[in-house]
Amino acid sequence: MRRVVRALTSLVLVGATSSCSAPTEPTQLSVDLTSTPAAATAVASKGVFYTIKGDDTHPDQTIEYPWKASFKVSLQETGGLAVDITAVNVRVQQASGGIVITPTTGTVERYEFNSSASGNRLESKGTASVGFEVWYDLPNKGREALVTVGFTFRDENSSTYSDSLDVRVTP
Image (cartoon, rainbow, N blue to C red; front, side, top):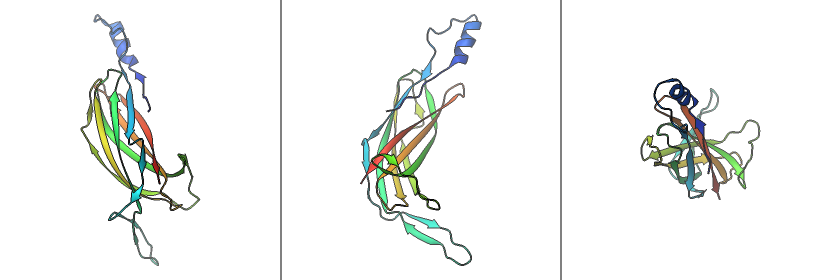
């Protein structure tokens, strides 16, 4: 579980210098991110492909992703600040025991994902969820991976925040 905390100092300063009463505590974003399941399981993938572009002497290669993992990320706002979820990003890395294994030079981790969100608004003290399907092919040809899911948020004053959650994918 990870927390993001950023005090809105500008709100406190504006409130303190105006004739309006200032809030007793600054409002802050505090989001708990959790994954269900806590560790996703890799399963054989069917029907999703990626393309490696060829050149003048080599044709393009179309390859099926060998692995797929599915999980849901729940977001719970606990700091009292409503925000919009403005972006979601996913990164897949080969791993062993939750430890990232850097690919050798010239090799890359290939992946794509699909997400399904309950909405783009996270109300103050509210919840939201985003489901993920992740297809991947790793240089070491293994199933075990670490999926980092990143979220970007924007509040009513256009301040932005971000947080991420690492989800282990087990064989």
